[in-house]
Amino acid sequence: MKTLDLDNMTQEQLLEQLKEIDRKDLEVLRKLEKYHNDNKLEYFKPNPKQAQIIGAWDNPQYKVFTFTGGNQMGKTTLGIIVALSVMFGEWLWNKKKLCFLIPCPVR
Image: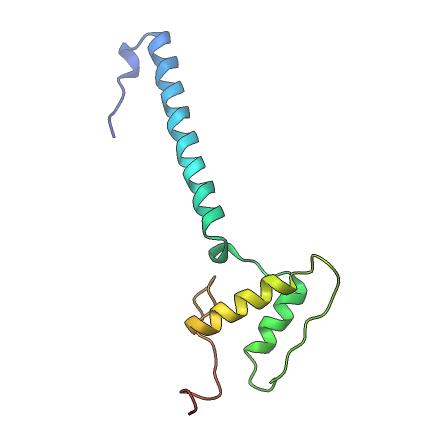
């Protein structure tokens, strides 16, 4: 990163430097937004009903789960996230290991 000699710069040069900094900041923000949109599982925050199911999943006392509700409740989203998490053996947004009652596949 280069340092600027602000004492020896004209007002026009300073304004141009500020514009360049703004352009770079905007580019970084766009890249962050794209990363966020392309990696939504990393940023998943369960709604309260989803959090109940996830909490129950971590409790070996529960064996059967149902999630019913109206449109836009997050049922499908949660189903996909749980399925993927089971495949990888951890919750995908916080990397917490999943608890399985059977340690290895049954033949």
